[in-house]
Structure formats: structure tokens, C-alpha cells
Length: 253
Image (cartoon, rainbow, N blue to C red; front, top):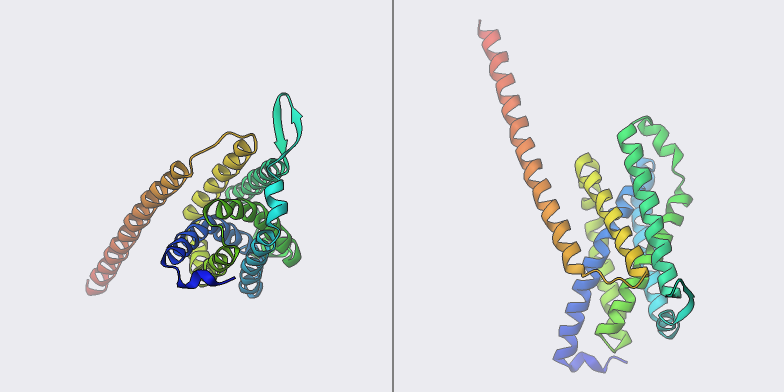
């Protein structure tokens, strides 16, 4: 099962696949961070780690059910000349779920009608885990099918998934804290999820969207937002300095 350990090409494949799994898991981490942000503070950390463990278990379960997964690409029925498979149904359903959830989160953020305690109380621990589990199934299916197309050894795929989730476990809290501190980043992340949801829907109808375009648009938007955050930070520091100078001037007078 692990004969590939002595094969350098297999290690290259493992590194490539692990990097791909990490990239595919970024959306998952951001979405989990947004969901757990609606929980009371003491429940956020356990929910974040349980959510990522669920993601790993879901991917491993789907991976070891590889024959069934590949069978999902076979057409189940036809609608208006469009063949629909099990994979298509999951992608379309998952895309609609992302659109609905991201729109709901944007609405709550913009309305601002809920206090922090009310928001935390409205989001139950179990409900958040259910939403995370649904998201994990959608993203896991897509990433596992991608992995199957890249690597033949199932042990390499499983190792790559475990490594990727390990990295995400380390990065989850810093990412979550950063998103909580910066509402504009949260809004940008929710916009990304709407774009991902639309992408899943169109791919469910066999319209291929090159992932490079999506990753580039996300990276470009995030780079612009980082520049805006840096600019706002500098302006805030200048404002504080000016305020201190005025305060000392008034004291001296």
C-alpha cells in the first residue's frame, strides 16, 4: 500500500496534491470561521476544530468510497436535453446552499439589527456543525474527484488530505480572528462564497469554469483589500498622533 514511499515521483505527486487540497480548503476555512463567529466565544474554538475534523473525515470517507464517487458522474436523468448526474445534483444543491447562506450572512452584517449576544444565542452549536457538515460534503466531493484525476495511489490521496487538514487546523484560528477583526474582509469572503456557489451551480450543468480565473480574482481582490487595510491603519495612527499632539498642546497652554 505504501510502496510509493521509495518513489521520488510519488513524493512530488503528494506535495502537489497536498498543496491543491490546502488551496481547495481555504474557502472551507473561511466559511467555517464565519459560521463559528456567530457562536458564543467559548464555543468558537471547539466548533472550529470539530468542523475541520469533520472535513477530514468526510474527505477520507468519500475517498475510500471511490468507486461510488466515480459512479456519480454517470447520468441519472435528463432535463431539457441536459444530462444530470449525482455529482451534478450535489454541486447544484451545494451551490444554492452557499448562495443562500452567504446572502443571509451579508444581510445580517449590513442590517446590524442583532446585538452580539443575540447573534450568538441565535446560532446553536449543533446547527452550526450541521451547516459545516453540509459544506464539507460539497467541497469534499469536488476535491476528492479532483484528487482521483491526479493520483492513482489511494494512500497518497489519504496522506495528502490529512496533511492539508493539519495545516488548516493550524491556520484556522488566525484566519478566523483576522476575519472577525476586519468586517470588510468578512464581506469580501462572503462575496467569494457567492462566487464559489455560482461556480458550483454552473459546473453542475456541465459548464466548466477554469479554477485559475477564480483563484486570480480572489487573490487580486484580497491584495487590494490588504492595501486598503494598511492605508486605514496608517491613517488611524496619524489621527492618534495628531490627537496626542493637540492634547499635549492644550496641557502646555
